[in-house]
Amino acid sequence: MKLSDLQNTRWTLNHPNLGTGPVSTQAYSSPEYFELIRDKVFKKTWICTGKRIDEIPNPGDYFLEETAITGTSVIIIRGLDNTLRGFHNTCMHRGTQLVFESYGNVKGKLTCIYHGWAYGLNGKNMVVTEREMFFDLETMEKDLIPVSVDVWSGIVFMNLDPSPKETLLQHIGPEVDDLFGAYPFETTSVQVSYRADLDCSWPVLRDSQIDGYHLKYLHKRSAPNFMESEESPNRHAYDFKLLGKHGFGSFYGNRAKIGADLSKVAPVASLASKVGQTLASDTATRVDLSQWAKGVNPTRSTDWFFDILYIFPNAHFIFLGYQQYIIHKMMPGKVVDKSSWNARYFAPPMPDGGLVDRWAAEYMKVSLRDLWREDGNTTMGAQRSINSGVFKKMYLQDQEILIRHAEKVLEEAVRF
Ligand code: FES
Ligand SMILES: [Fe+2]
Image 1 (cartoon, rainbow, N blue to C red):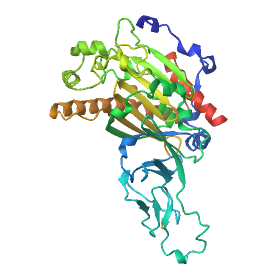
Image 2: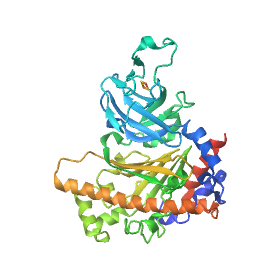
Image 3: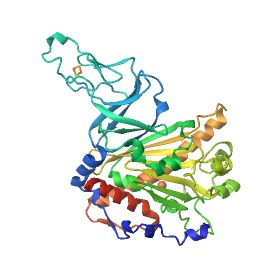
Image 4: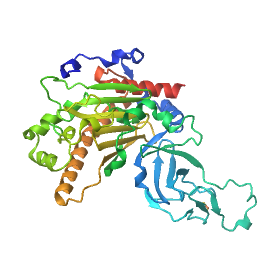
């Protein structure tokens, strides 16, 4: 397909079930709907933690997943047998939390600070102190409460339901697995992780990243000239795919031209893109496009900026290159109009090349921070308008198909 063809493509019309009418903001403001989202989605569905298995490489390594909407704290821990398991961070004596750090390591067992009960890394109770003083030792439920944990392409997911109605692979679906499972996720490690607590509902946060419409406007200072093209003045997306519950978009970005003429970006950005891998680097020239996972940059365009893969309910994978991606973990807060956002950038571990590599990587980190601040700043005003009651429906254009689809999927998940 030529760039000029994209101007007149209407992706939404290929999916009549989505409709073309305005979309209600009910999911963005209703406390009753928020409770349904909690019970039908966040207590029952696979949730992407945004973390990789290599972040807890050794037996006893753990991280905590604290989820405001469900009020839960979950320990995801590597066992002595190297298996990852998840447990509520809840001592079975009087409920005190067992671990307190976001990441850590325990040697062989989890010991409660309150009265000294201890549990193996498999969740089995090992120690009840002063056991002779208890009355029902044999029938007491003493083992930790399990949570389902599984891994897709090295990325850790959890499901609060200990007996989920579908496996993680079934949730991801064969199409997503086929298109993106071969991406070399394992060659990367997290380079930067930002977190923000926002005064906006979770769907507002979700939507802030899944349209290509805003790029040219909102990010005109942080990504200058990335979206301009005589052939495609509106820089419309190369591709949209609705993949069951998930959604995908591939976006035009002029990177090849930017890479060829770095005068279009700030001098410091130009220098960083030459010595390291940044947003202005021409990624398509670094690794032959034929080697890329087939889902990424599916049109194999050199004028490509990035792809978004939205994995229902809470993750965006943003592919920026062959071995360069972001995971946005977006979680609802305790109440309907609060949410939290963890943005993590992954790339190959920093080469031991000294200051120049380090400087380019730092430049990439601050570039992403600037983009993310721009995105984050739009969310809170939108929520204020929704909360005020004056703003009840959204008119979405064709390039916002992923928002329309995500709302439809959510509606189906909470209603059925
Ligand atoms: S609450 Fe943990 S041992 Fe008492
Ligand atoms: Fe954005």
